[in-house]
Figure: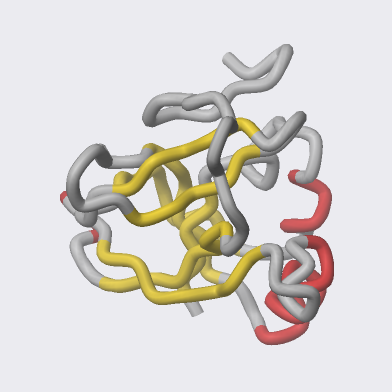
Length: 121
């Protein structure tokens, strides 16, 4: 399955180790309008057709075992994130899945289209 990652799972960032053994396909952007908010050390992506933008990230081919691990990391069972289809643009103009934040973002700072951490070049 193709997975679009936009935060700490990207190459070189703090949770990249969770992507071990999976195939990097390339960089991409969402075709649908979304926003990134800072949740205190990691981002959350939400859909926003009115104030959103194309979010930048990476596309990966991941197996079922990796998805199960990532669902644990993203607290899918507790409802923090949901793995949902997302449309991409450009070279990867098809549908992948991504983790969308499911809780309130009121008062959370806006990140912009690209998540960075210290050391992210």
